[in-house]
Length: 433
Image (cartoon, rainbow, N blue to C red; front, side, top):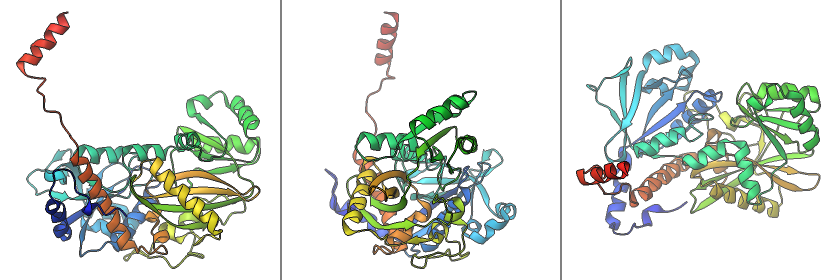
């Protein structure tokens, strides 16, 4: 990973940079999880896995839970994954909260009573926001934008990479334009589909033919995904996908499919790839489902997964997979290099997972999608790569702090008073003219 502490900004003494090393034990890490998203529960599992693995000699976890109704809560009771089995009782123990910009690039958590802030209570200050939100607001750049506006360090990719990576259609367009192979696809919006279903079905059959894969364009965890082998199933799959998103993508199915995934850690300047995994589907049609990823009992061929200390949920680590994937050295290097290339193309940071498809019929490799906040933060790919989960979290936090430091090196404001009397009189004169 980039050793940002050895990078000296122009005009900034090295001692000033290294001074931040001495207060690591004082850092409050705000774990943001939950969210108004179909992937709400996945976010809870991933984030509390990270909390359990966090090095407490360096960091203190502060939970910020976003409930399904959009209300924000904090409190130590939210750190117990078992408590989420009775969410109503749990929220009675938690404190509703909001966030406001704090001093020195920190974020303040402020208790809320009804619609009003109770400023009489002491706010908690967050040094770094650790984003564990999956899908929708939280992974699409919106919470990242809030962090940017509040000038707080946060883990993961920025607004651009998050928003672009969340949209499967735009992701494919960018990769295709950069000569990264993608399968053929058709995308449509719900307003385009309405009252023109037969026309669209004709077009999809003409452009792609069967079988096809239907997906919500901006959702993950295999929610709303279906394989269609005929017109009736295609019609049904599109209608089902529109339940989750107003934009849907239909892809030509890879007939002899092998899925492989690779995680990348770093930033746009320097990044490294993990070992590669081959997920195994329990269904005959080889399309990984939400159940395959999160509900199946036990983990198949991967090394034993680290469990949440208080609950034992394994998230993405419970998926049957082969690690490392049974690939030749040449093919493995090709995919790892391609993963890093995609990571940098999307200007990602922290940890991301890039998913690929191999067509065994012609040995072709295709980019499938990028996950800028991957399930379980892909720790199960980094442990066999020589990076234990606590160290992975530490590196993610350090990258977040480096990015904030790099941002502050650049001019944030322009010192000119356009509201001075002289400037205003000039504006008035221009208006009259």
